[in-house]
Length: 197
Image (cartoon, rainbow, N blue to C red; front, side, top):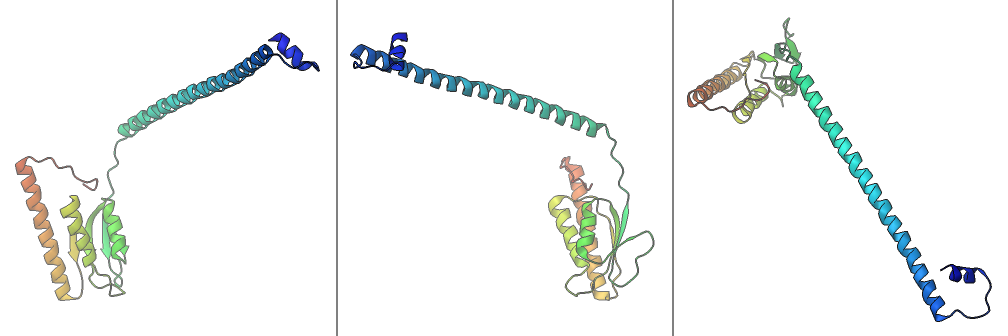
């Protein structure tokens, strides 16, 4: 090879022999092979580094998750502070109660699992929303999502018929809860309760 490279470096007058051309091509092929092999080696090194970083990341993430779970398990759950919610758009909210003007506000509070008592009005400002929306949400949550415990629910509407309708639906819902809970206890079923229990 040395003879070939020396010959390329100096101006030459005679044409290259077939052996020199063959040696030159072999030399260039070897350079190309060496360059490709170096790229392959570098790619393999990078792959190993990526794998190592990935393994370290996964190990660190698993350690973090284990530590986080241990901390959460060590904490004692705080008992929820009971809420008494009063839905009305005109009457003043009684002392010790949380006042709401719209059914969606009451439903958001119910989802926290802290509501122990509800007092609902039928008619609200815009005549499109009523206290019955809260009862309908409760019926759906109790029947389909096993929402427990059911808070004490009352109605205070000045419309006697609507108040009676709300009381009837509340009574039917309480009866449904009582029957399903007793049937579950008698059958030994272990359906899990939602977090609002």
